[in-house]
Length: 285
Picture 1 (cartoon, rainbow, N blue to C red):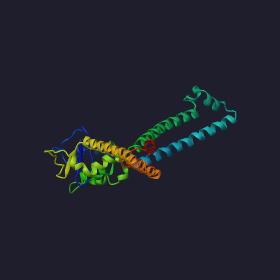
Picture 2 (tube, one colour):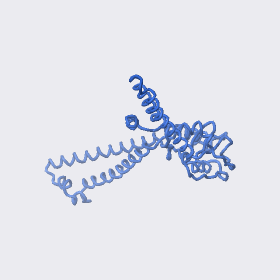
Picture 3 (cartoon, helix red, strand yellow):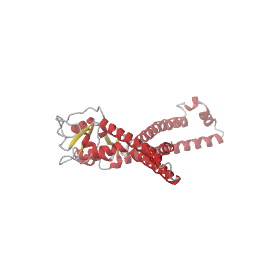
Picture 4 (cartoon, helix red, strand yellow):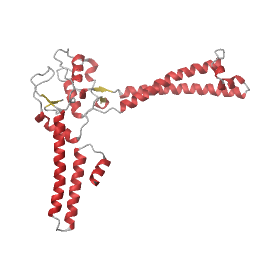
C-alpha cells in the first residue's frame, strides 16, 4: 500500500504493510513511531556522519599513540639484547618469560598489549559498522518531502527542542527500507497515483483530505502494461516500416533501422533502471 499527498505525490509503504492507527497516540514520540511503523518507506533516520568520523579519528589516534609506545618498548628490548641481556631475548621468544609477573618489562608489554587489544577491537568494530552505514541508501526526494511535511504538519513540529531541526540536514539521512522501482513506475506514482487511488472511509487524525492511498501493485501492473505496449509498438513498427520500404533505396532502410534502434535504446535507458552493459546488450540483440 502506498500513501500520497495530492500536491506532493509521494509513495510510502509497501504492499501488505500493517497500517497502525494513531487515533489514540499522544502527539510526539508515540505518534511519530506510529507514522514510521505504518509505512516502511518512512523509516528515515540520521546516520550522524560527522560524529562517526570524529569517533573513528579519535580511535585511530589512540591506536597510533599505543603503536608508538609499543615501538619504544621494542627499541629498548633491542638495546638490551645488544648489551647481551638474555632476558630481552627470552621475553621475545618464550611465552613463559613474557607472562612472568616478576619481570617488570614483560608486565609493561602485557599491559600495553591488553590496552591495544581493547582499542583495536573497538576501532575495527566501528570501521565495519561505518562501512555498513555508508552503504545505506538515501531516501527518495518524494518520500523525504512527504516525511518532512508530516513532521512539520502542525503549527509546531512533532518533536520539540533541538529535535525540531532533527531532519534539517538531508545529506545525513538514510532510509532503512528504500523504494526500489524503475523510472516508469516513479513517473506513474508522481503524476498518476491519484487516478489509481483506493477509496477509504476511515482516516487517522494525522491524515487530511489531501492524503490518499493506492496499492503499489496497481502501479506495477500499469508500468508492466505500458512496457509491453511500447516494446510491441517498436518491434511491430520496425517490421512494418521495413516491409513498406523494402523496394526503395538502401539508405532509407538503414536510416529506419538506426531510428528504431535508437528509440529502443532510449526507452530502455529512460524508463527502466537498466545499467549501461544491459542497455548495450539489449540494443545489440
